[in-house]
Image 1 (cartoon, rainbow, N blue to C red):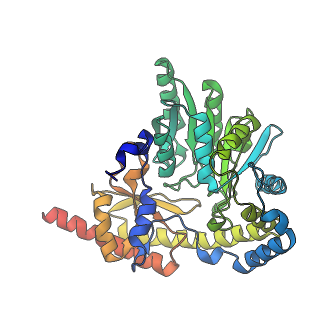
Image 2: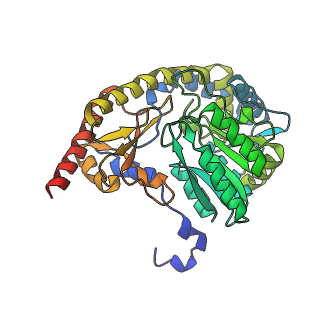
Image 3: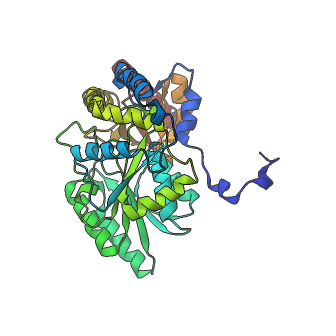
Length: 407
């Protein structure tokens, strides 16, 4: 790297490797029970149905499915996607448009790129999705965290921060939230807080990026109404993905929002990849039409509820005296906080040696506090692995406490 450092753009110095991606590489090929990634359970993939769809798409629509597509996406797919979103309680209004992206991560990057100038204030939940932090840092924004609790972002603290920034003459342009089954905490913003967040957006004139990859997996109660559906002023850009509800390998996501913003995102996307995979869009379109996506959602929701319950049960049995953790109503994650000040990043190699992996929590915090926290995923490991993995994790923690206290 030193040989070429003089050629690299200054912005590369702000790029950070995804800790989760690096961790997955570290555990690859080893006999390790992984609570690290946010991977769907492969048993939820409807392989036979997707195989038939892929063959049909190439055989019947190959002239289009194997061709270039408009940057915003295949028109028929965008229409199908709008109907799918509407059927799942996401409002698509007359002033809205949809752009298809290569996973929701590209949607997040594009919307951030077109909205954020250097030093613009972006408010996020704390903790928050670390890949979002990496995007905001790369764009040199000023990131302001607001605490969350069991009901999501503390909008009372948000209001105090907004007042303070306004008094300083600082404009807040954007708030990024993952309000339903949040990554990493698993918490869900209450309906009252959602409404109040939108009131604050109107009063202080900012936009909201709503990232919603997990909203289809709520196990307790009905699906929570997205901010996008409560919004009446066109202040929300809604991001979604088929990665969790069909298959991540298709790399199909989207952004739904005011047409003026989507049009500029289209220009930005032209410079990135021209358009997302045409073939994947046709496969996803047919999967929606044939009910495969809805069937996948139901299959995953049923399975993940059982897995969540098993993880919570094992944590209670093994770690109730040593840690606290969130109790998500859905999604893929539990966020654990140790009662002892143990650095979970330093603890990780010992856990991997014992055969279990997790994501240290510090990376989800702005100033990398939260060193005694960790994110645990329950969607990917089997039920047997969840039980054994929690026991291995508990043994690692207990050994560390005993060693530290003895020392």
